Length: 399
Image (cartoon, rainbow, N blue to C red; front, side, top):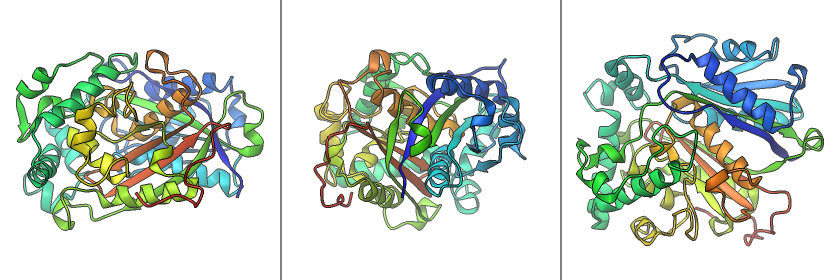
C-alpha cells in the first residue's frame, strides 16, 4: 500500500476570541497550512475531513461544509468527524485512509471548536457528554471529576504524591511559554500548581486544561502527489481503538486500554518501538492523563510514569520530550482541533520549524489523541524521509 505524507500544517492562535467565529478560526488554520505547503489552489484538494464536537458556534448540522466552503473549497466532499476530543485525530486517520486507498491524492484534515461563547453551565454540559451521559453526567459527575477518580486511583496504587501531577503542569507551561499560539503561554512554578484551588480532589486548577477556541489543519498527500511539495513528513503508522465510554464500565481506572491498543497498532504498522521515538505529543487534558499516556504508549513500564516525570526525562531537553507544544494544558484544548493541532507540532518539529521549541534534528515522533475519558483513542507515528531504520526491525512491539 502506498505511503501517505503530511505536506502542510497550520493552526490558528488558541485562546478566547469573542470577536472571532469558527469560520474565521478555521480560515486562519487552513491558510497557515496552505502557506506551509508552498501555496494551494482550491482545485488541488480532493477531499476534506473536519472534526468538531459542536460546543459553540451554534452550527450543529453541516459544520464541515460551512468551513470548507468558507475557505474556497467549493464542491469538495467534506465529512464531519465527531469522536469527542479525538475528533480531528480521527479526521487525520480518515484522510490517511482516503489517500492510501487511492480515492484521493490530497486531503484536508482538521478541526475546530469555539468553547468560550457559551455559558459555563453549557460548556460543562458539552464536556460532560464526552463521557457516559446517562450514568455519569446525569448523575452529577463532571469531566474533571472523572479524571480526578483516575488520578486518585493512580496515586494510591503507586504510592505517589500529587506533586508529580504538578510537575506535568510546570513542564508543559514552560513549553507553552515558547509557543506563540498557546492559550496559557506563561510559565508556572511547582508552588503555583500545588497551591492552586482544588477543582476535583486531587486535581487543582493547574492540573486541568483550559476551555479554548481554536482550529488546526493538515494536508495529507499520496506518495505521488507529495513529490511536488518541498516539505514532506511520512505517516509511518496509524492506530485507533475504542472502549466503554463510561469510566465505571471499565476494568481499570489507572490505564486507558484504547490508548494501549491504538499505540500497539501504530507501532506495528510503522515497524517501530517506543524507543525509536524522538518526541511525543500526548493527550494531557488533565495532568493525570499525561502520566497514564507514558505507560499506555509504552514509554515506560507500568508504574514508571512518576519516575519519568520526576526525573525530567520528558522535558524539552530530556531523553524523550513530551508535549513540546505545551500540550492541552498550556497550548489549550479546542476539542475538535486538538488532534490536528498535535500533528501540526509534529510536522513543525520534523521539518525544523518549531521556533524556540525546536528539538535537535528529530526523526520520528508520535501523536496521541483521546476522546472523553478513553472511549476512543488514535495514535499516529510520523517520521522524516531520511529517518534512521527503527530498532524494531521485527515490526514493532506491544505498548
